Amino acid sequence: MKTVRLWLGAEEMVAELAASPEQVHAGMMFRTNLAENEGMLFDLVYPQRASFWMPNCPLPLSVAYINPEGVIEEIHDLQPFDTNLVFSASDDIRFALETRQGWFKRHHVGVRAVIRSELGSLMQTFSSSR
Picture 1 (cartoon, rainbow, N blue to C red):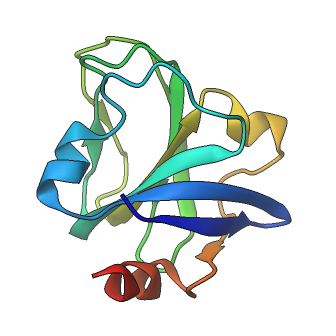
Picture 2 (cartoon, rainbow, N blue to C red; picture 1 turned 30 degrees about the horizontal axis):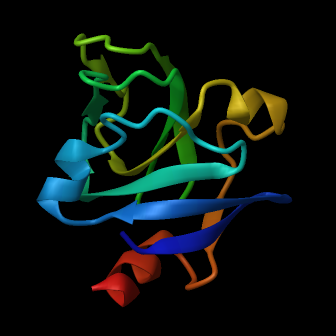
């Protein structure tokens, strides 16, 4: 899976790009470790009411639901092995970023933060990765 550098305000992270349906479906399943400044960025293909769950995922994660402009709309914690869907309140979610649980709080990144990558906007990031 391709990786890119992301900037969330002043914070930097390296994220794997989940672009194909198979990569989006598998997500972080079966991962047993994740460094502090690593994550996975998901392309949800079109704006929607997003939902994530944690089957086969032993790591506690946080997910940011992100609109088409790359702005974080919501942040939710995800519990290991939880098979309940965690829905976004918004139906305008185009991307999602999963990282270690609590990363957003520890790094003072919240709702309304803009995410960009070394390739530009998130839309440009995924169009460049194909």
